[in-house]
Amino acid sequence: MNTPVTESSATKGFDVRRAGINPNLWYVVARSSEVRDRPLGVTLWQQDIVLYRDTQGQIHALEDRCPHRFVKLSRGAVVGDELECAYHGWRVGAAGQCTCVPYLEPNQKLPTSTIRRYPVQELDGFIWVFPGDVKALETQAIAPMGVPEWDHLNYIASVTVIDTQAHFSYLIENLMDMYHGHLHQDLQAWASAELQGIEESRDRVDVHYLAQSYYRIDKIWSVSQLFFPALRRLHPEPLDVSYAYPNWISRLGNDFKIYCLFCPVSETHTRAYLLHFTSLNAFHRLHKLPVPFRRFVKNRMFNAAEKLLIGLVDQDIPMIEDEQKAYLENPDRRPHELNRALVSVQKLIRIQAEMGNG
Ligand code: FES
Ligand SMILES: [Fe+2]
Image (cartoon, rainbow, N blue to C red):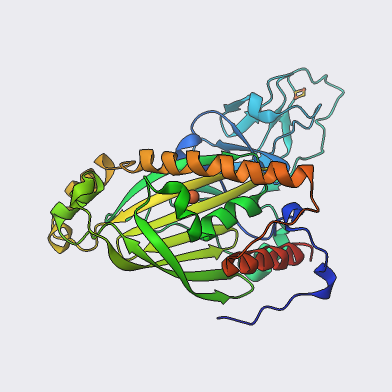
Protein backbone atom coordinates (compact mmCIF):
# COMPACT_ATOMS: atom_id res chain seq x y z
CA MET A 1 0.00 0.00 0.00
CA ASN A 2 1.35 3.43 -0.85
CA THR A 3 0.83 6.07 1.77
CA PRO A 4 1.93 9.62 1.09
CA VAL A 5 5.24 10.34 2.75
CA THR A 6 5.60 13.59 4.61
CA GLU A 7 8.68 15.14 6.08
CA SER A 8 8.67 15.25 9.85
CA SER A 9 9.62 18.56 11.39
CA ALA A 10 11.62 16.54 13.94
CA THR A 11 14.04 15.49 11.21
CA LYS A 12 14.70 18.91 9.69
CA GLY A 13 18.44 19.31 9.45
CA PHE A 14 18.81 15.53 9.36
CA ASP A 15 22.09 14.47 7.73
CA VAL A 16 21.50 11.41 5.57
CA ARG A 17 25.25 10.67 5.53
CA ARG A 18 25.15 10.06 9.26
CA ALA A 19 21.75 8.36 9.34
CA GLY A 20 21.33 5.36 11.60
CA ILE A 21 19.59 2.17 10.55
CA ASN A 22 16.17 0.98 11.60
CA PRO A 23 17.27 -1.97 13.75
CA ASN A 24 13.78 -3.48 13.93
CA LEU A 25 14.28 -5.40 10.70
CA TRP A 26 16.22 -8.47 9.60
CA TYR A 27 19.66 -7.91 8.06
CA VAL A 28 21.77 -10.34 6.08
CA VAL A 29 25.16 -10.76 7.77
CA ALA A 30 26.64 -13.79 5.99
CA ARG A 31 26.06 -16.50 3.45
CA SER A 32 24.99 -19.86 4.90
CA SER A 33 28.06 -21.46 3.36
CA GLU A 34 30.35 -19.13 5.32
CA VAL A 35 29.28 -20.65 8.64
CA ARG A 36 30.67 -24.16 8.89
CA ASP A 37 32.47 -25.70 11.86
CA ARG A 38 34.20 -22.54 13.08
CA PRO A 39 32.70 -19.41 14.65
CA LEU A 40 32.33 -16.48 12.26
CA GLY A 41 32.59 -12.88 13.46
CA VAL A 42 30.49 -10.26 11.65
CA THR A 43 29.66 -6.63 12.38
CA LEU A 44 26.20 -5.16 11.97
CA TRP A 45 25.92 -1.44 12.68
CA GLN A 46 28.79 -1.29 15.20
CA GLN A 47 27.70 -4.50 16.91
CA ASP A 48 30.17 -7.38 16.78
CA ILE A 49 28.27 -10.64 16.47
CA VAL A 50 29.55 -14.22 16.42
CA LEU A 51 27.70 -16.83 14.38
CA TYR A 52 28.11 -20.57 14.85
CA ARG A 53 26.37 -23.86 14.13
CA ASP A 54 25.58 -26.38 16.85
CA THR A 55 25.74 -30.17 16.44
CA GLN A 56 22.28 -30.14 14.79
CA GLY A 57 23.40 -27.57 12.21
CA GLN A 58 21.27 -24.91 13.88
CA ILE A 59 22.66 -21.36 13.61
CA HIS A 60 23.16 -19.18 16.70
CA ALA A 61 24.11 -15.50 16.93
CA LEU A 62 25.68 -14.06 20.08
CA GLU A 63 27.43 -10.89 21.07
CA ASP A 64 31.06 -11.40 20.02
CA ARG A 65 32.45 -10.80 23.53
CA CYS A 66 33.56 -13.43 25.98
CA PRO A 67 31.83 -12.79 29.34
CA HIS A 68 35.23 -13.17 31.03
CA ARG A 69 37.41 -10.37 29.62
CA PHE A 70 35.43 -9.39 26.53
CA VAL A 71 37.79 -10.74 23.89
CA LYS A 72 36.12 -11.89 20.68
CA LEU A 73 34.55 -15.31 20.92
CA SER A 74 34.92 -15.61 17.16
CA ARG A 75 38.66 -16.20 17.79
CA GLY A 76 37.74 -19.37 19.65
CA ALA A 77 36.18 -22.66 18.60
CA VAL A 78 32.85 -24.46 18.44
CA VAL A 79 32.80 -27.32 20.95
CA GLY A 80 29.64 -29.40 20.75
CA ASP A 81 26.75 -26.96 21.02
CA GLU A 82 28.85 -24.24 22.68
CA LEU A 83 31.53 -21.68 21.94
CA GLU A 84 34.90 -21.92 23.62
CA CYS A 85 36.90 -18.75 24.09
CA ALA A 86 40.47 -18.82 22.77
CA TYR A 87 41.95 -17.03 25.79
CA HIS A 88 41.20 -19.05 28.95
CA GLY A 89 38.82 -21.62 27.53
CA TRP A 90 35.60 -20.44 29.12
CA ARG A 91 32.55 -21.81 27.34
CA VAL A 92 29.31 -20.07 26.43
CA GLY A 93 26.01 -21.75 25.48
CA ALA A 94 23.54 -20.73 22.79
CA ALA A 95 21.53 -18.64 25.27
CA GLY A 96 24.64 -16.56 26.01
CA GLN A 97 25.24 -18.12 29.45
CA CYS A 98 28.62 -19.22 30.76
CA THR A 99 28.61 -23.04 30.95
CA CYS A 100 32.18 -23.89 31.88
CA VAL A 101 35.31 -22.34 33.40
CA PRO A 102 38.12 -24.92 33.13
CA TYR A 103 39.86 -23.79 36.33
CA LEU A 104 36.82 -23.22 38.56
CA GLU A 105 37.73 -24.00 42.15
CA PRO A 106 35.39 -26.17 44.26
CA ASN A 107 34.20 -23.20 46.31
CA GLN A 108 33.58 -21.01 43.23
CA LYS A 109 30.37 -20.73 41.19
CA LEU A 110 30.02 -20.21 37.48
CA PRO A 111 29.56 -16.52 36.65
CA THR A 112 25.90 -15.81 35.96
CA SER A 113 26.31 -12.85 33.64
CA THR A 114 25.16 -13.54 30.10
CA ILE A 115 26.05 -12.06 26.74
CA ARG A 116 23.45 -10.84 24.28
CA ARG A 117 21.75 -13.34 22.05
CA TYR A 118 20.37 -12.18 18.69
CA PRO A 119 17.37 -13.60 16.86
CA VAL A 120 18.82 -15.33 13.80
CA GLN A 121 17.40 -17.25 10.84
CA GLU A 122 18.91 -19.18 8.00
CA LEU A 123 16.84 -18.51 4.92
CA ASP A 124 17.42 -18.77 1.15
CA GLY A 125 21.15 -19.28 1.43
CA PHE A 126 21.81 -16.43 3.86
CA ILE A 127 22.02 -15.76 7.61
CA TRP A 128 19.59 -13.04 8.73
CA VAL A 129 20.01 -11.31 12.09
CA PHE A 130 17.52 -9.08 13.89
CA PRO A 131 19.49 -6.44 15.84
CA GLY A 132 16.48 -4.57 17.22
CA ASP A 133 13.92 -4.78 19.98
CA VAL A 134 12.90 -8.41 20.51
CA LYS A 135 9.49 -7.32 21.85
CA ALA A 136 8.81 -5.51 18.57
CA LEU A 137 9.79 -8.66 16.71
CA GLU A 138 7.31 -10.74 18.68
CA THR A 139 4.42 -8.29 18.62
CA GLN A 140 4.74 -7.13 15.03
CA ALA A 141 5.65 -10.49 13.46
CA ILE A 142 8.48 -8.96 11.43
CA ALA A 143 9.80 -11.45 8.85
CA PRO A 144 13.06 -11.47 6.89
CA MET A 145 12.63 -10.46 3.25
CA GLY A 146 14.04 -13.70 1.84
CA VAL A 147 15.30 -14.35 -1.68
CA PRO A 148 12.95 -16.96 -3.18
CA GLU A 149 14.97 -17.26 -6.41
CA TRP A 150 18.04 -18.52 -4.54
CA ASP A 151 16.84 -22.14 -4.37
CA HIS A 152 14.26 -21.95 -7.17
CA LEU A 153 15.14 -24.24 -10.08
CA ASN A 154 14.17 -21.63 -12.67
CA TYR A 155 16.86 -19.16 -11.66
CA ILE A 156 20.61 -19.23 -12.21
CA ALA A 157 22.22 -17.43 -9.28
CA SER A 158 25.46 -15.49 -9.05
CA VAL A 159 26.75 -13.65 -6.02
CA THR A 160 29.55 -11.34 -4.97
CA VAL A 161 30.35 -9.22 -1.93
CA ILE A 162 30.45 -5.44 -1.86
CA ASP A 163 32.70 -4.07 0.86
CA THR A 164 33.00 -0.31 0.75
CA GLN A 165 34.29 2.37 3.09
CA ALA A 166 31.16 4.45 2.82
CA HIS A 167 27.82 5.09 4.49
CA PHE A 168 25.03 2.83 3.24
CA SER A 169 23.19 5.82 1.76
CA TYR A 170 25.91 6.18 -0.91
CA LEU A 171 25.54 2.55 -1.95
CA ILE A 172 21.75 2.57 -2.15
CA GLU A 173 21.77 5.85 -4.07
CA ASN A 174 24.23 4.35 -6.52
CA LEU A 175 21.92 1.36 -6.99
CA MET A 176 18.75 3.43 -7.39
CA ASP A 177 20.31 5.88 -9.85
CA MET A 178 20.10 4.27 -13.27
CA TYR A 179 21.65 7.36 -14.83
CA HIS A 180 25.06 6.10 -13.79
CA GLY A 181 25.00 3.55 -16.63
CA HIS A 182 27.60 5.91 -18.08
CA LEU A 183 30.13 4.28 -15.74
CA HIS A 184 29.37 0.72 -16.85
CA GLN A 185 29.14 1.10 -20.60
CA ASP A 186 31.17 -2.02 -21.25
CA LEU A 187 29.41 -4.23 -18.67
CA GLN A 188 25.79 -3.32 -18.50
CA ALA A 189 22.82 -5.28 -19.87
CA TRP A 190 21.01 -2.08 -20.80
CA ALA A 191 21.47 1.50 -21.97
CA SER A 192 19.62 4.85 -22.07
CA ALA A 193 17.46 4.61 -18.95
CA GLU A 194 14.63 7.13 -18.62
CA LEU A 195 12.81 7.77 -15.35
CA GLN A 196 9.08 7.03 -15.77
CA GLY A 197 7.66 7.17 -12.26
CA ILE A 198 8.27 6.87 -8.53
CA GLU A 199 6.12 5.32 -5.80
CA GLU A 200 6.89 6.04 -2.17
CA SER A 201 5.72 4.48 1.07
CA ARG A 202 7.07 4.23 4.61
CA ASP A 203 8.74 0.90 3.78
CA ARG A 204 9.96 1.26 0.24
CA VAL A 205 10.60 3.34 -2.85
CA ASP A 206 9.84 1.89 -6.27
CA VAL A 207 11.35 3.64 -9.25
CA HIS A 208 10.37 2.77 -12.80
CA TYR A 209 12.74 3.43 -15.67
CA LEU A 210 12.46 2.47 -19.29
CA ALA A 211 15.75 1.20 -20.68
CA GLN A 212 17.10 -0.23 -23.89
CA SER A 213 18.09 -3.80 -23.12
CA TYR A 214 20.68 -5.75 -25.03
CA TYR A 215 19.29 -9.14 -24.09
CA ARG A 216 16.10 -11.04 -24.78
CA ILE A 217 16.24 -14.47 -23.20
CA ASP A 218 13.26 -16.21 -24.78
CA LYS A 219 14.81 -19.19 -26.57
CA ILE A 220 17.35 -21.49 -25.05
CA TRP A 221 19.99 -20.43 -27.58
CA SER A 222 19.40 -16.78 -26.72
CA VAL A 223 21.36 -17.34 -23.51
CA SER A 224 24.40 -17.18 -25.81
CA GLN A 225 23.81 -13.41 -25.99
CA LEU A 226 25.36 -13.32 -22.55
CA PHE A 227 28.63 -14.52 -24.02
CA PHE A 228 28.56 -13.18 -27.63
CA PRO A 229 27.95 -9.43 -27.87
CA ALA A 230 27.31 -9.67 -31.64
CA LEU A 231 24.04 -11.52 -30.94
CA ARG A 232 22.57 -8.70 -28.86
CA ARG A 233 19.82 -6.43 -30.19
CA LEU A 234 18.68 -3.32 -28.37
CA HIS A 235 14.99 -3.27 -27.48
CA PRO A 236 12.99 -1.38 -24.81
CA GLU A 237 12.39 -3.11 -21.47
CA PRO A 238 11.05 -1.85 -18.16
CA LEU A 239 13.83 -1.44 -15.60
CA ASP A 240 12.36 -1.33 -12.11
CA VAL A 241 14.48 -0.65 -9.06
CA SER A 242 13.19 -0.80 -5.50
CA TYR A 243 14.58 0.24 -2.18
CA ALA A 244 12.77 -2.35 -0.09
CA TYR A 245 14.42 -0.98 3.02
CA PRO A 246 17.09 -2.01 3.97
CA ASN A 247 17.64 -3.99 0.74
CA TRP A 248 17.55 -3.33 -2.99
CA ILE A 249 15.77 -5.26 -5.73
CA SER A 250 15.90 -4.62 -9.45
CA ARG A 251 14.27 -6.22 -12.46
CA LEU A 252 15.12 -5.83 -16.10
CA GLY A 253 12.18 -7.15 -18.14
CA ASN A 254 11.38 -10.76 -17.25
CA ASP A 255 14.85 -12.14 -17.61
CA PHE A 256 17.04 -10.58 -14.94
CA LYS A 257 16.62 -9.87 -11.29
CA ILE A 258 19.32 -8.42 -9.04
CA TYR A 259 19.27 -8.03 -5.28
CA CYS A 260 21.58 -6.16 -2.98
CA LEU A 261 21.32 -7.36 0.62
CA PHE A 262 22.69 -4.70 2.94
CA CYS A 263 24.77 -5.20 6.06
CA PRO A 264 25.61 -1.66 7.23
CA VAL A 265 28.73 -1.99 9.39
CA SER A 266 29.21 1.58 10.58
CA GLU A 267 28.70 5.18 9.48
CA THR A 268 31.59 4.83 7.03
CA HIS A 269 31.61 1.13 6.17
CA THR A 270 29.02 -0.97 4.35
CA ARG A 271 29.05 -4.62 3.36
CA ALA A 272 26.45 -6.11 1.07
CA TYR A 273 25.78 -9.18 -1.03
CA LEU A 274 25.01 -8.53 -4.68
CA LEU A 275 22.95 -11.33 -6.21
CA HIS A 276 22.18 -11.77 -9.89
CA PHE A 277 19.51 -14.13 -11.17
CA THR A 278 19.00 -15.12 -14.79
CA SER A 279 15.50 -16.48 -15.24
CA LEU A 280 14.83 -19.71 -17.09
CA ASN A 281 11.07 -19.13 -16.84
CA ALA A 282 10.74 -18.66 -20.59
CA PHE A 283 12.05 -22.18 -21.32
CA HIS A 284 8.93 -24.24 -20.79
CA ARG A 285 10.47 -27.44 -22.13
CA LEU A 286 13.22 -27.23 -19.59
CA HIS A 287 10.64 -27.29 -16.81
CA LYS A 288 9.44 -30.74 -17.90
CA LEU A 289 12.88 -32.28 -17.37
CA PRO A 290 13.54 -34.29 -14.20
CA VAL A 291 14.20 -32.20 -11.12
CA PRO A 292 17.67 -33.72 -10.43
CA PHE A 293 18.75 -32.66 -13.93
CA ARG A 294 17.38 -29.16 -13.46
CA ARG A 295 19.16 -28.97 -10.12
CA PHE A 296 22.37 -30.08 -11.84
CA VAL A 297 22.00 -27.31 -14.47
CA LYS A 298 21.30 -24.72 -11.78
CA ASN A 299 24.32 -25.80 -9.73
CA ARG A 300 26.65 -26.05 -12.73
CA MET A 301 25.74 -22.53 -13.84
CA PHE A 302 26.03 -21.06 -10.34
CA ASN A 303 28.08 -17.88 -10.41
CA ALA A 304 28.08 -17.67 -14.24
CA ALA A 305 27.63 -13.90 -13.88
CA GLU A 306 30.12 -13.48 -11.01
CA LYS A 307 32.76 -11.79 -13.17
CA LEU A 308 30.17 -9.34 -14.46
CA LEU A 309 29.10 -8.51 -10.89
CA ILE A 310 32.70 -8.06 -9.74
CA GLY A 311 33.34 -5.78 -12.74
CA LEU A 312 30.34 -3.59 -11.88
CA VAL A 313 31.30 -3.42 -8.20
CA ASP A 314 34.92 -2.54 -9.03
CA GLN A 315 33.66 0.39 -11.08
CA ASP A 316 31.12 1.56 -8.49
CA ILE A 317 33.24 1.40 -5.33
CA PRO A 318 35.72 4.19 -6.21
CA MET A 319 32.76 6.50 -7.01
CA ILE A 320 31.04 5.75 -3.72
CA GLU A 321 34.23 6.11 -1.70
CA ASP A 322 35.10 9.40 -3.42
CA GLU A 323 31.70 10.71 -2.38
CA GLN A 324 32.25 9.60 1.20
CA LYS A 325 35.71 11.19 1.33
CA ALA A 326 34.43 14.45 -0.11
CA TYR A 327 31.66 14.47 2.48
CA LEU A 328 34.07 13.89 5.38
CA GLU A 329 36.34 16.67 4.12
CA ASN A 330 33.50 19.12 3.82
CA PRO A 331 30.13 17.94 5.16
CA ASP A 332 28.43 21.25 4.38
CA ARG A 333 29.19 21.21 0.69
CA ARG A 334 26.03 19.95 -1.02
CA PRO A 335 26.21 17.96 -4.25
CA HIS A 336 23.95 18.78 -7.19
CA GLU A 337 21.43 15.97 -7.58
CA LEU A 338 19.00 15.99 -10.48
CA ASN A 339 17.57 12.47 -10.21
CA ARG A 340 14.28 12.71 -8.30
CA ALA A 341 14.55 9.07 -7.25
CA LEU A 342 17.38 9.94 -4.89
CA VAL A 343 15.27 12.50 -3.07
CA SER A 344 12.78 9.69 -2.38
CA VAL A 345 15.58 7.36 -1.25
CA GLN A 346 16.90 9.92 1.22
CA LYS A 347 13.41 10.52 2.54
CA LEU A 348 12.97 6.80 3.18
CA ILE A 349 16.32 6.56 4.98
CA ARG A 350 15.16 9.41 7.20
CA ILE A 351 11.77 7.84 7.93
CA GLN A 352 13.31 4.47 8.75
CA ALA A 353 15.98 6.04 10.98
CA GLU A 354 13.18 7.81 12.84
CA MET A 355 11.20 4.58 13.16
CA GLY A 356 14.34 2.95 14.56
CA ASN A 357 14.61 5.68 17.18
CA GLY A 358 11.17 4.67 18.40
S1 FES B 1 38.64 -13.82 27.94
FE1 FES B 1 37.50 -15.49 27.31
S2 FES B 1 38.08 -17.06 28.61
FE2 FES B 1 39.14 -15.37 29.33
FE1 LIG C 1 26.72 0.66 -10.72
